[in-house]
Length: 231
Image 1 (cartoon, helix red, strand yellow):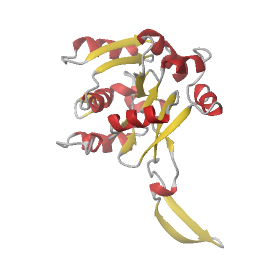
Image 2 (cartoon, rainbow, N blue to C red):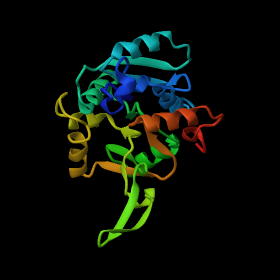
Image 3 (tube, helix red, strand yellow):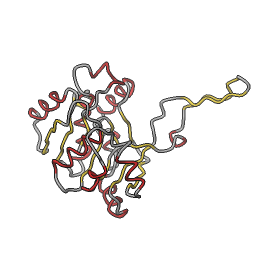
């Protein structure tokens, strides 16, 4: 399950005529690269939750020559992530699913993630990642800069990196289509001790800025991009 319906306002230079997951990295949309992470590990049945400029994704899926099983589901123009997940889970029925965002790439070992989720025995698991080091770390004393270095990602804690595993009952934690998953269902799962965190300390990178898009585009040209390495 891939969330691909947002507006992509932080990279508006690329998203005026297409949704963010359709921004190209080496002639293929980042959405394809996300799905390829799963397909390379034996998971090739996808449901794509569309919204903004969703017709671009629907047309692309129809034209895509692949053995993957892909359904593009229109989940509404302005529906938040919670509503999109709920609609998709209702569509697929009572099955455990992977879910992630259509604009983030990481070399997540999905079998390891799934085994961790099963061992934990909770309703949902989120992959915790290090945030990208976008800013330099500045230290000063009495107005004088004493140190300026690139921020160490290990100093930045952990954030939600997507790559969820969700049991069917998770849809019951989403009260309506008008709430984000991150501020609705996730805190409710936490309050009932039903959310696990799988810590991934290797490659993960979102595409939130043009700079990140250009960096990912260069990586996509490699024979073995970092989001496919060591998985």
